[in-house]
Length: 254
Image 1 (cartoon, rainbow, N blue to C red):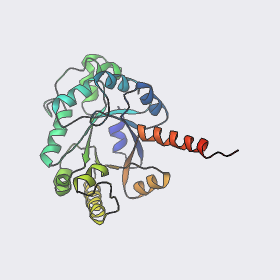
Image 2: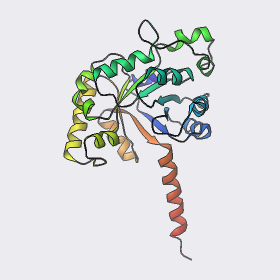
Image 3: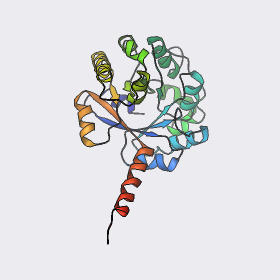
């Protein structure tokens, strides 16, 4: 469990690949290709609990950390994902400082949180005895908040004041949709919102994440603005690759 440490090393810039395809094979390929983390997506992906466990297990033997985006903020979702062996949780639709505090509490065991004890599966993923999992994992579980609503935009300063957040990740598709300008990433109001969030997060010292970055130029632009973590999508990579190879065939002339 090294991802929390990586996030708080200001010299590191990292990638996280969102996995919506319910496949341990796809996850293993991404992990072995060098991604710093996979985000196994139970909010928008077709991933049930069996696939979740297999995908988390498929990261073993690599330097890639398995994270899970849960369907909604809820202790039961957090507990199941962590007990399957996830190294961290990505929380969607965080709107207030109270939401942020609840997220931090859900990933920690008492007395610092409310996570229920039951790592019967998780301890094997991390190769520790069952009774050593708590002491091994409790301070290493990652808490990432998605900033993706107008409420989060309004409350960004108070959200960033909550202790225990390991990354604030700007989800621009949801944020623009929440603002009524879906996909209009060059809209003045959207650019103003992004600047406000970036400045608040960077001032707080919380690592900043965002994306997707489709090119090296886009990635370097984000890193130069203070982002530490960028993301892509397995399904979109696949579709883009197939579309490209199809174009080679369709454009060929004898």
